[in-house]
Figure 1 (cartoon, rainbow, N blue to C red):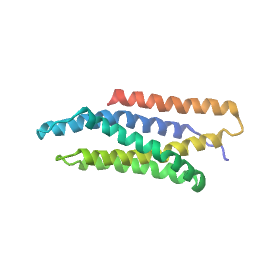
Figure 2 (cartoon, one colour):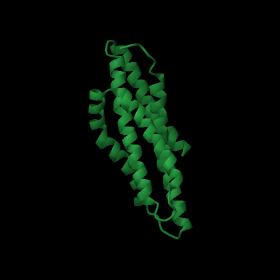
Figure 3 (cartoon, helix red, strand yellow):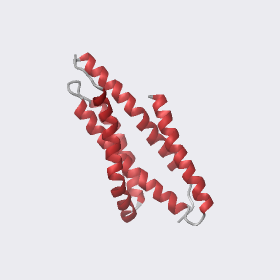
Length: 159
């Protein structure tokens, strides 16, 4: 495997998790604002469903996407995953003001699919990249976890 930098993957992981941390807060507030403007009530369960839709989709599909990325190659998943994420963000602009919860839930499912495509492909790439050097593997996997947890924390703060 040619020696390339893994910094773009770590930066991409940070951005992915930053989006995940911020999206739940922003979408919850957005849903509450739409409900308030249209005289509807919003419950904690409605807001919680936004996070559940994302994480259940990601956790369910990640093993399947990981197996497919091993079979078909990681490049496809490392390219298509972020494209789906961008599509999800653009589709937020078209959120209906009447009954927005089902639409936002479907967008969270799309974001979960995007994440499920990226995470196993990144981890597989890092494993291949560090296959000959256990010390390097520990270092890069630590950076990966730092990018993941740091991105989620920064996303909550930004949200």
